[in-house]
Image 1 (tube, rainbow, N blue to C red):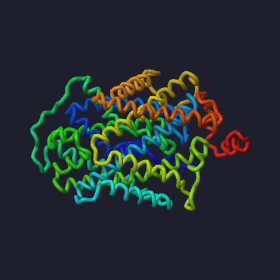
Image 2 (image 1 turned 45 degrees about the vertical axis):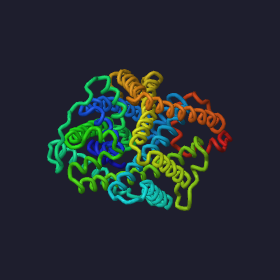
Image 3 (image 1 turned 90 degrees about the vertical axis):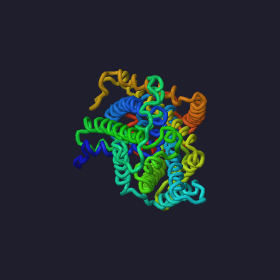
Image 4 (image 1 turned 45 degrees about the horizontal axis):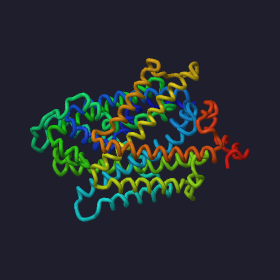
Length: 467
Protein backbone atom coordinates (compact mmCIF):
# COMPACT_ATOMS: atom_id res chain seq x y z
CA UNK A 1 0.00 0.00 0.00
CA UNK A 2 1.36 3.43 -0.96
CA UNK A 3 1.71 5.81 1.94
CA UNK A 4 0.17 9.23 1.59
CA UNK A 5 3.02 11.71 1.48
CA UNK A 6 1.39 15.15 1.31
CA UNK A 7 0.43 17.18 4.36
CA UNK A 8 -1.37 20.41 5.18
CA UNK A 9 1.55 22.59 4.07
CA UNK A 10 1.57 20.94 0.63
CA UNK A 11 -2.14 21.63 0.12
CA UNK A 12 -1.63 25.28 1.14
CA UNK A 13 1.31 25.78 -1.23
CA UNK A 14 -0.50 24.11 -4.14
CA UNK A 15 -3.63 26.21 -3.57
CA UNK A 16 -1.66 29.47 -3.43
CA UNK A 17 0.44 28.56 -6.47
CA UNK A 18 -2.61 27.69 -8.56
CA UNK A 19 -4.51 30.88 -7.71
CA UNK A 20 -1.90 33.61 -8.04
CA UNK A 21 -1.32 34.80 -11.63
CA UNK A 22 -0.36 38.02 -13.39
CA UNK A 23 -3.99 38.64 -14.42
CA UNK A 24 -4.79 38.90 -10.70
CA UNK A 25 -2.58 41.98 -10.59
CA UNK A 26 -4.78 43.68 -13.19
CA UNK A 27 -7.85 43.07 -11.03
CA UNK A 28 -5.89 44.19 -7.97
CA UNK A 29 -4.85 47.38 -9.77
CA UNK A 30 -8.37 48.11 -10.99
CA UNK A 31 -9.94 47.53 -7.57
CA UNK A 32 -7.31 49.51 -5.70
CA UNK A 33 -7.42 52.34 -8.23
CA UNK A 34 -11.20 52.56 -7.84
CA UNK A 35 -11.67 52.22 -4.07
CA UNK A 36 -8.26 52.82 -2.51
CA UNK A 37 -7.35 50.67 0.48
CA UNK A 38 -11.03 49.93 1.16
CA UNK A 39 -10.71 47.44 -1.71
CA UNK A 40 -9.30 45.20 1.03
CA UNK A 41 -12.86 44.93 2.42
CA UNK A 42 -14.16 43.85 -1.00
CA UNK A 43 -11.37 41.27 -1.10
CA UNK A 44 -12.39 39.95 2.32
CA UNK A 45 -16.00 39.44 1.15
CA UNK A 46 -14.84 37.67 -2.03
CA UNK A 47 -12.48 35.47 0.01
CA UNK A 48 -15.28 34.37 2.37
CA UNK A 49 -17.60 33.56 -0.55
CA UNK A 50 -14.84 31.50 -2.17
CA UNK A 51 -14.39 29.66 1.12
CA UNK A 52 -18.03 28.53 0.96
CA UNK A 53 -17.35 27.17 -2.54
CA UNK A 54 -14.23 25.35 -1.35
CA UNK A 55 -16.31 23.79 1.43
CA UNK A 56 -19.04 22.66 -0.99
CA UNK A 57 -16.54 21.16 -3.43
CA UNK A 58 -14.81 19.38 -0.54
CA UNK A 59 -18.11 17.76 0.44
CA UNK A 60 -18.76 16.71 -3.17
CA UNK A 61 -15.27 15.22 -3.34
CA UNK A 62 -15.95 13.34 -0.10
CA UNK A 63 -19.17 11.96 -1.59
CA UNK A 64 -17.52 10.96 -4.89
CA UNK A 65 -13.82 10.49 -4.09
CA UNK A 66 -11.14 9.89 -6.71
CA UNK A 67 -13.25 11.07 -9.63
CA UNK A 68 -11.17 12.68 -12.36
CA UNK A 69 -13.92 14.86 -13.85
CA UNK A 70 -14.60 16.82 -10.69
CA UNK A 71 -17.47 19.27 -11.06
CA UNK A 72 -18.62 17.65 -14.32
CA UNK A 73 -19.24 14.33 -12.62
CA UNK A 74 -20.81 15.91 -9.53
CA UNK A 75 -23.25 17.87 -11.72
CA UNK A 76 -24.00 14.88 -13.96
CA UNK A 77 -25.05 12.86 -10.91
CA UNK A 78 -26.96 15.78 -9.37
CA UNK A 79 -28.90 17.55 -12.13
CA UNK A 80 -28.13 15.88 -15.46
CA UNK A 81 -26.12 16.04 -18.72
CA UNK A 82 -27.14 19.48 -20.05
CA UNK A 83 -25.81 21.56 -17.14
CA UNK A 84 -22.78 19.27 -17.07
CA UNK A 85 -21.81 19.79 -20.70
CA UNK A 86 -22.49 23.54 -20.55
CA UNK A 87 -20.39 23.92 -17.39
CA UNK A 88 -17.57 21.79 -18.79
CA UNK A 89 -17.30 23.63 -22.10
CA UNK A 90 -18.02 27.03 -20.58
CA UNK A 91 -16.39 26.71 -17.17
CA UNK A 92 -13.34 24.72 -18.20
CA UNK A 93 -12.57 25.29 -21.87
CA UNK A 94 -13.86 28.80 -22.63
CA UNK A 95 -13.03 30.30 -19.26
CA UNK A 96 -9.53 28.80 -19.10
CA UNK A 97 -8.60 29.76 -22.65
CA UNK A 98 -10.01 33.25 -22.07
CA UNK A 99 -8.02 33.76 -18.85
CA UNK A 100 -4.90 32.28 -20.43
CA UNK A 101 -5.31 34.59 -23.43
CA UNK A 102 -5.52 37.56 -21.09
CA UNK A 103 -2.38 36.34 -19.31
CA UNK A 104 -0.61 36.10 -22.68
CA UNK A 105 -1.73 39.63 -23.56
CA UNK A 106 -0.30 40.95 -20.28
CA UNK A 107 2.94 39.07 -20.99
CA UNK A 108 3.33 40.57 -24.48
CA UNK A 109 2.56 44.10 -23.24
CA UNK A 110 5.06 43.72 -20.36
CA UNK A 111 7.80 42.41 -22.65
CA UNK A 112 7.26 45.09 -25.31
CA UNK A 113 7.13 47.83 -22.68
CA UNK A 114 10.37 46.65 -21.05
CA UNK A 115 12.37 45.89 -24.21
CA UNK A 116 11.06 48.78 -26.32
CA UNK A 117 11.46 48.90 -30.10
CA UNK A 118 8.91 48.80 -32.89
CA UNK A 119 7.93 45.12 -32.76
CA UNK A 120 4.14 44.79 -32.17
CA UNK A 121 3.52 43.16 -28.81
CA UNK A 122 1.22 40.53 -30.33
CA UNK A 123 4.26 39.11 -32.15
CA UNK A 124 5.72 38.03 -28.81
CA UNK A 125 2.44 36.28 -27.97
CA UNK A 126 2.45 34.43 -31.30
CA UNK A 127 6.05 33.26 -30.87
CA UNK A 128 5.41 32.05 -27.32
CA UNK A 129 2.17 30.30 -28.29
CA UNK A 130 3.77 28.60 -31.30
CA UNK A 131 6.81 27.35 -29.33
CA UNK A 132 4.66 25.99 -26.50
CA UNK A 133 2.30 24.28 -28.97
CA UNK A 134 5.19 22.77 -30.93
CA UNK A 135 6.80 21.39 -27.78
CA UNK A 136 3.52 19.91 -26.53
CA UNK A 137 2.76 18.34 -29.91
CA UNK A 138 6.07 16.48 -29.61
CA UNK A 139 5.10 15.21 -26.18
CA UNK A 140 7.50 17.51 -24.31
CA UNK A 141 5.89 18.82 -21.12
CA UNK A 142 7.73 22.14 -21.05
CA UNK A 143 8.64 23.53 -17.66
CA UNK A 144 6.87 20.67 -15.83
CA UNK A 145 9.70 20.51 -13.34
CA UNK A 146 9.81 24.25 -12.70
CA UNK A 147 6.08 24.87 -12.21
CA UNK A 148 6.51 25.01 -8.43
CA UNK A 149 9.60 27.20 -8.76
CA UNK A 150 7.74 29.67 -10.97
CA UNK A 151 4.83 29.82 -8.54
CA UNK A 152 7.28 30.36 -5.67
CA UNK A 153 9.07 33.16 -7.54
CA UNK A 154 5.82 34.95 -8.37
CA UNK A 155 4.34 34.65 -4.88
CA UNK A 156 7.69 35.43 -3.21
CA UNK A 157 8.23 38.46 -5.43
CA UNK A 158 4.79 39.84 -4.64
CA UNK A 159 5.35 39.35 -0.91
CA UNK A 160 8.77 41.04 -0.97
CA UNK A 161 7.70 43.89 -3.26
CA UNK A 162 4.50 44.41 -1.32
CA UNK A 163 6.31 44.53 2.02
CA UNK A 164 8.93 46.98 0.70
CA UNK A 165 6.17 49.26 -0.54
CA UNK A 166 4.05 48.93 2.59
CA UNK A 167 6.86 50.03 4.93
CA UNK A 168 7.94 52.78 2.54
CA UNK A 169 11.43 51.37 1.85
CA UNK A 170 11.33 51.70 -1.94
CA UNK A 171 13.80 53.66 -4.05
CA UNK A 172 11.16 56.00 -5.48
CA UNK A 173 9.53 58.94 -3.75
CA UNK A 174 6.53 58.18 -1.56
CA UNK A 175 3.27 59.65 -2.80
CA UNK A 176 0.91 61.84 -0.83
CA UNK A 177 -2.50 60.50 -1.85
CA UNK A 178 -5.64 59.57 0.07
CA UNK A 179 -5.99 56.11 1.55
CA UNK A 180 -9.71 55.91 0.76
CA UNK A 181 -11.39 56.80 -2.54
CA UNK A 182 -14.74 55.14 -1.78
CA UNK A 183 -16.06 54.30 1.69
CA UNK A 184 -19.73 53.60 0.90
CA UNK A 185 -20.54 49.94 1.56
CA UNK A 186 -22.60 49.64 -1.62
CA UNK A 187 -19.61 50.81 -3.65
CA UNK A 188 -17.32 48.39 -1.81
CA UNK A 189 -19.75 45.47 -2.25
CA UNK A 190 -20.05 46.20 -5.96
CA UNK A 191 -16.29 45.64 -6.34
CA UNK A 192 -16.41 42.13 -4.86
CA UNK A 193 -16.84 40.82 -8.42
CA UNK A 194 -13.46 42.34 -9.34
CA UNK A 195 -11.94 40.92 -6.15
CA UNK A 196 -13.42 37.49 -6.92
CA UNK A 197 -10.81 36.87 -9.64
CA UNK A 198 -8.05 37.09 -7.02
CA UNK A 199 -9.25 33.87 -5.35
CA UNK A 200 -10.36 31.67 -8.27
CA UNK A 201 -8.75 28.24 -8.59
CA UNK A 202 -7.99 27.07 -5.04
CA UNK A 203 -10.30 24.08 -5.63
CA UNK A 204 -7.83 22.67 -8.17
CA UNK A 205 -5.98 21.24 -5.19
CA UNK A 206 -8.85 18.78 -4.60
CA UNK A 207 -7.58 16.13 -7.12
CA UNK A 208 -4.51 15.55 -4.93
CA UNK A 209 -6.70 14.60 -1.94
CA UNK A 210 -5.99 10.88 -2.37
CA UNK A 211 -2.30 11.62 -1.74
CA UNK A 212 -2.91 13.76 1.36
CA UNK A 213 -2.63 12.53 4.92
CA UNK A 214 -5.87 13.09 6.89
CA UNK A 215 -7.52 14.49 3.76
CA UNK A 216 -10.82 15.01 5.59
CA UNK A 217 -9.20 17.83 7.55
CA UNK A 218 -6.16 18.89 5.56
CA UNK A 219 -7.67 19.39 2.08
CA UNK A 220 -10.50 21.84 2.94
CA UNK A 221 -8.43 23.48 5.70
CA UNK A 222 -5.40 23.83 3.42
CA UNK A 223 -7.43 25.48 0.67
CA UNK A 224 -9.00 27.91 3.13
CA UNK A 225 -5.62 28.77 4.64
CA UNK A 226 -4.33 29.30 1.11
CA UNK A 227 -7.17 31.73 0.36
CA UNK A 228 -6.45 33.62 3.59
CA UNK A 229 -2.72 33.86 2.81
CA UNK A 230 -3.56 35.21 -0.66
CA UNK A 231 -5.82 37.79 1.00
CA UNK A 232 -2.97 38.89 3.30
CA UNK A 233 -0.48 39.05 0.42
CA UNK A 234 -2.80 41.06 -1.81
CA UNK A 235 -3.69 43.39 1.08
CA UNK A 236 0.00 44.14 1.58
CA UNK A 237 0.26 44.91 -2.14
CA UNK A 238 -2.65 47.37 -1.89
CA UNK A 239 -0.90 49.20 0.96
CA UNK A 240 2.29 49.25 -1.10
CA UNK A 241 0.39 50.64 -4.09
CA UNK A 242 -0.86 53.50 -1.92
CA UNK A 243 2.67 54.60 -1.11
CA UNK A 244 4.20 54.47 -4.59
CA UNK A 245 1.70 54.37 -7.49
CA UNK A 246 -1.07 56.86 -8.26
CA UNK A 247 -4.48 55.26 -7.89
CA UNK A 248 -5.62 56.49 -11.30
CA UNK A 249 -2.62 54.98 -13.10
CA UNK A 250 -3.23 51.64 -11.39
CA UNK A 251 -6.83 51.48 -12.57
CA UNK A 252 -5.86 52.25 -16.18
CA UNK A 253 -2.75 50.05 -16.52
CA UNK A 254 -2.63 46.78 -18.48
CA UNK A 255 0.40 45.73 -16.40
CA UNK A 256 0.27 47.36 -12.93
CA UNK A 257 3.05 45.09 -11.66
CA UNK A 258 5.49 46.89 -13.98
CA UNK A 259 4.44 50.30 -12.67
CA UNK A 260 4.86 49.12 -9.12
CA UNK A 261 8.15 47.31 -9.75
CA UNK A 262 9.64 50.45 -11.31
CA UNK A 263 8.36 52.67 -8.48
CA UNK A 264 9.88 50.37 -5.86
CA UNK A 265 13.24 49.34 -7.34
CA UNK A 266 13.60 51.36 -10.54
CA UNK A 267 14.58 49.64 -13.80
CA UNK A 268 15.72 46.52 -11.94
CA UNK A 269 12.32 46.17 -10.27
CA UNK A 270 10.53 46.53 -13.60
CA UNK A 271 12.70 43.87 -15.27
CA UNK A 272 12.36 41.58 -12.24
CA UNK A 273 8.56 41.75 -12.30
CA UNK A 274 8.51 41.31 -16.08
CA UNK A 275 10.68 38.17 -15.96
CA UNK A 276 8.79 36.53 -13.10
CA UNK A 277 5.47 37.39 -14.74
CA UNK A 278 6.71 36.02 -18.08
CA UNK A 279 7.76 32.73 -16.49
CA UNK A 280 4.38 32.47 -14.77
CA UNK A 281 2.51 33.08 -18.04
CA UNK A 282 4.60 30.53 -19.96
CA UNK A 283 4.09 27.99 -17.20
CA UNK A 284 0.33 28.68 -17.09
CA UNK A 285 -0.10 28.47 -20.86
CA UNK A 286 1.87 25.26 -21.05
CA UNK A 287 -0.32 23.69 -18.36
CA UNK A 288 -3.49 24.95 -20.04
CA UNK A 289 -2.61 23.60 -23.49
CA UNK A 290 -1.63 20.26 -22.01
CA UNK A 291 -4.46 19.78 -19.51
CA UNK A 292 -7.36 21.15 -21.59
CA UNK A 293 -6.37 18.98 -24.55
CA UNK A 294 -6.48 15.94 -22.25
CA UNK A 295 -9.87 17.05 -20.85
CA UNK A 296 -11.21 17.40 -24.40
CA UNK A 297 -9.78 13.99 -25.24
CA UNK A 298 -11.55 12.46 -22.24
CA UNK A 299 -14.83 14.18 -23.15
CA UNK A 300 -14.52 12.88 -26.72
CA UNK A 301 -14.07 9.34 -25.36
CA UNK A 302 -17.23 9.93 -23.28
CA UNK A 303 -18.97 10.98 -26.52
CA UNK A 304 -19.42 14.51 -25.14
CA UNK A 305 -17.30 16.15 -27.86
CA UNK A 306 -16.42 15.40 -31.53
CA UNK A 307 -14.22 12.32 -31.98
CA UNK A 308 -11.39 14.31 -33.54
CA UNK A 309 -10.50 15.60 -30.05
CA UNK A 310 -9.64 12.00 -29.05
CA UNK A 311 -7.21 11.41 -31.93
CA UNK A 312 -3.50 11.35 -31.11
CA UNK A 313 -0.35 11.81 -33.17
CA UNK A 314 2.73 9.58 -33.22
CA UNK A 315 3.83 11.06 -29.89
CA UNK A 316 0.54 9.88 -28.29
CA UNK A 317 -0.69 13.44 -27.65
CA UNK A 318 -4.19 14.74 -28.56
CA UNK A 319 -2.98 17.00 -31.36
CA UNK A 320 -6.29 18.56 -32.39
CA UNK A 321 -7.14 19.57 -28.83
CA UNK A 322 -3.76 21.23 -28.42
CA UNK A 323 -4.10 23.15 -31.70
CA UNK A 324 -7.68 24.16 -30.82
CA UNK A 325 -6.74 25.39 -27.32
CA UNK A 326 -3.65 27.25 -28.57
CA UNK A 327 -5.68 28.98 -31.30
CA UNK A 328 -8.35 30.01 -28.76
CA UNK A 329 -5.70 31.40 -26.41
CA UNK A 330 -4.12 33.41 -29.20
CA UNK A 331 -7.54 34.73 -30.28
CA UNK A 332 -8.33 36.04 -26.80
CA UNK A 333 -4.80 37.48 -26.52
CA UNK A 334 -5.26 39.26 -29.85
CA UNK A 335 -8.64 40.68 -28.82
CA UNK A 336 -7.24 42.05 -25.54
CA UNK A 337 -3.83 43.09 -26.92
CA UNK A 338 -2.53 46.36 -25.41
CA UNK A 339 -5.98 47.27 -24.08
CA UNK A 340 -6.42 47.58 -20.32
CA UNK A 341 -10.16 48.03 -20.80
CA UNK A 342 -10.51 44.85 -22.86
CA UNK A 343 -8.33 42.91 -20.41
CA UNK A 344 -10.58 44.06 -17.55
CA UNK A 345 -13.68 43.19 -19.60
CA UNK A 346 -12.53 39.65 -20.41
CA UNK A 347 -11.47 39.03 -16.81
CA UNK A 348 -14.94 40.05 -15.59
CA UNK A 349 -16.66 37.99 -18.31
CA UNK A 350 -14.53 34.99 -17.35
CA UNK A 351 -15.44 35.59 -13.71
CA UNK A 352 -19.17 35.34 -14.53
CA UNK A 353 -18.68 32.01 -16.29
CA UNK A 354 -16.65 30.71 -13.36
CA UNK A 355 -19.22 32.04 -10.87
CA UNK A 356 -21.96 30.06 -12.59
CA UNK A 357 -19.93 26.87 -12.16
CA UNK A 358 -19.47 27.71 -8.46
CA UNK A 359 -23.24 28.17 -8.08
CA UNK A 360 -23.70 24.73 -9.64
CA UNK A 361 -21.34 23.27 -7.01
CA UNK A 362 -23.52 24.66 -4.21
CA UNK A 363 -26.68 23.39 -5.94
CA UNK A 364 -25.09 19.93 -6.27
CA UNK A 365 -24.47 19.85 -2.51
CA UNK A 366 -28.08 20.80 -1.72
CA UNK A 367 -29.42 18.20 -4.18
CA UNK A 368 -27.31 15.40 -2.70
CA UNK A 369 -28.23 16.46 0.84
CA UNK A 370 -31.90 15.97 -0.13
CA UNK A 371 -31.53 12.88 -2.31
CA UNK A 372 -28.78 11.02 -0.43
CA UNK A 373 -28.89 12.28 3.16
CA UNK A 374 -27.34 9.12 4.62
CA UNK A 375 -24.64 8.55 1.99
CA UNK A 376 -21.18 8.36 3.64
CA UNK A 377 -19.18 11.59 3.56
CA UNK A 378 -15.94 12.11 5.46
CA UNK A 379 -16.48 15.88 5.18
CA UNK A 380 -19.68 17.92 5.33
CA UNK A 381 -20.14 21.66 4.99
CA UNK A 382 -20.89 22.87 8.54
CA UNK A 383 -24.19 24.57 9.28
CA UNK A 384 -26.39 22.39 7.07
CA UNK A 385 -27.76 24.23 4.01
CA UNK A 386 -26.82 27.69 5.32
CA UNK A 387 -23.35 28.13 3.79
CA UNK A 388 -24.28 26.73 0.33
CA UNK A 389 -27.27 29.09 0.19
CA UNK A 390 -25.11 32.03 1.28
CA UNK A 391 -22.62 31.02 -1.41
CA UNK A 392 -25.36 30.95 -4.08
CA UNK A 393 -26.85 34.30 -3.04
CA UNK A 394 -23.47 36.00 -2.65
CA UNK A 395 -22.19 34.73 -6.00
CA UNK A 396 -25.45 35.73 -7.71
CA UNK A 397 -25.05 39.22 -6.22
CA UNK A 398 -21.57 39.46 -7.71
CA UNK A 399 -22.91 38.44 -11.12
CA UNK A 400 -25.63 41.11 -10.92
CA UNK A 401 -23.02 43.69 -9.92
CA UNK A 402 -20.17 42.48 -12.10
CA UNK A 403 -19.20 46.04 -13.05
CA UNK A 404 -19.81 49.53 -11.70
CA UNK A 405 -20.22 50.76 -15.30
CA UNK A 406 -23.84 50.03 -16.42
CA UNK A 407 -22.85 49.72 -20.10
CA UNK A 408 -19.95 47.35 -19.38
CA UNK A 409 -22.17 45.33 -17.04
CA UNK A 410 -24.81 44.95 -19.75
CA UNK A 411 -22.20 43.93 -22.33
CA UNK A 412 -20.77 41.29 -19.95
CA UNK A 413 -24.26 39.91 -19.33
CA UNK A 414 -24.91 39.91 -23.07
CA UNK A 415 -21.66 38.11 -23.90
CA UNK A 416 -22.06 35.45 -21.21
CA UNK A 417 -25.79 35.09 -21.90
CA UNK A 418 -25.24 34.50 -25.61
CA UNK A 419 -22.37 32.11 -24.81
CA UNK A 420 -24.55 30.02 -22.49
CA UNK A 421 -27.46 30.10 -24.96
CA UNK A 422 -25.27 28.81 -27.79
CA UNK A 423 -23.68 26.22 -25.50
CA UNK A 424 -27.12 25.17 -24.27
CA UNK A 425 -28.48 24.62 -27.79
CA UNK A 426 -25.34 22.77 -28.88
CA UNK A 427 -25.35 20.63 -25.71
CA UNK A 428 -29.05 19.74 -25.99
CA UNK A 429 -28.69 18.63 -29.61
CA UNK A 430 -25.46 16.75 -28.91
CA UNK A 431 -26.86 14.91 -25.89
CA UNK A 432 -30.03 13.83 -27.68
CA UNK A 433 -28.44 12.92 -31.04
CA UNK A 434 -24.97 11.61 -30.13
CA UNK A 435 -25.20 10.55 -26.47
CA UNK A 436 -28.83 9.41 -26.65
CA UNK A 437 -29.58 10.50 -23.09
CA UNK A 438 -32.34 12.63 -21.52
CA UNK A 439 -30.91 16.13 -21.25
CA UNK A 440 -32.12 16.88 -17.71
CA UNK A 441 -32.38 13.44 -16.11
CA UNK A 442 -29.61 12.92 -13.59
CA UNK A 443 -27.37 9.89 -13.91
CA UNK A 444 -27.28 7.68 -10.78
CA UNK A 445 -24.20 8.30 -8.69
CA UNK A 446 -22.94 4.72 -8.94
CA UNK A 447 -23.21 4.89 -12.74
CA UNK A 448 -21.20 8.11 -12.82
CA UNK A 449 -18.56 6.44 -10.67
CA UNK A 450 -18.54 3.53 -13.15
CA UNK A 451 -17.68 5.97 -15.93
CA UNK A 452 -14.16 6.09 -14.50
CA UNK A 453 -13.64 2.68 -16.14
CA UNK A 454 -12.84 2.71 -19.88
CA UNK A 455 -14.94 -0.43 -20.36
CA UNK A 456 -18.08 1.66 -19.77
CA UNK A 457 -17.57 3.44 -23.09
CA UNK A 458 -16.53 0.30 -24.93
CA UNK A 459 -19.74 -1.48 -23.90
CA UNK A 460 -21.98 1.46 -24.89
CA UNK A 461 -20.40 1.58 -28.33
CA UNK A 462 -20.62 -2.21 -28.78
CA UNK A 463 -24.34 -2.07 -27.95
CA UNK A 464 -24.84 0.68 -30.52
CA UNK A 465 -25.96 3.23 -27.93
CA UNK A 466 -23.20 5.62 -28.95
CA UNK A 467 -22.18 6.05 -32.55
